[in-house]
Length: 386
Image (cartoon, rainbow, N blue to C red; front, side, top):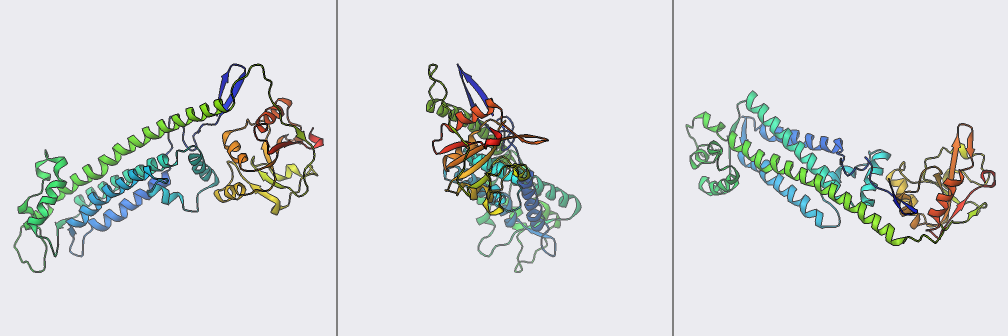
């Protein structure tokens, strides 16, 4: 949160902290990176291990190290134009085992309009881990095993395949030993119909070409897009902060002659009102408040400590509710967004080791000014805390 002074008025603007990411250091979720690492290990090991004779199909490697990286990168970039990002990170965060703190992180990126940029950043980190793991597996097998690179096709012959491989090899035209050749293609074609006395050393001749495909179509593009995604995220986060500040200022023009408007404080509640625990208050603290109905079926949970399901349930509640907040914490934008879609009462609570105590006058006035912007809400303060 940043506090900005403009004359006699003080504005508090909610900005992303280390969760979901600060503008200076976007946070990478290592579980998503671990998924990319695992996929790189499984797929690369599976393809490079070859068949029972140790023969590795060159066309499978082209799919894994050229077509798959290009297709996934294009899908991730094009998805920025749509309403939702489509990438590996979105699939991983949809899994149900994330903690309440991590789910709060996901909600904040959506609230700050950074969700697609944040997902792109995470997916590129996972893709870079995939590429590094694939390279590691490739070198390990080159050092420890005798890999025979061959290719098989029912419809294509060497002259058909060579132009396609030459196009793929254009980015490393300076690397002569990594260029494909017709002689190498003809010598490494594997078919049950062909019986040749080819030198076994020729079957290993493709390793530099395969290494180059990983470097130029997987590792380097992912590293560049990761840097670009990080810079884009930082730029978008700063733009969003400036936009939110300008909207807040335009919605509340400065007036030095006009005093603050304070929302009234009420001391009575409707019967059986639903309680929404935004502040994560221990319910045992509230036992002394006879006005509150603390039955389990009468409680909702929202805010930074709520799970995604708990937050969704609270946001869908349309009847009156009593929202519990910490009196000493300043109102933030996330709470304002939540309250805009509901109605009821807000109870600012203060306590110490002895139990509940009346909130400070300055804290109460700050909450009154905050609630005065939301006509469907009122401040509730029990008589014993008044």
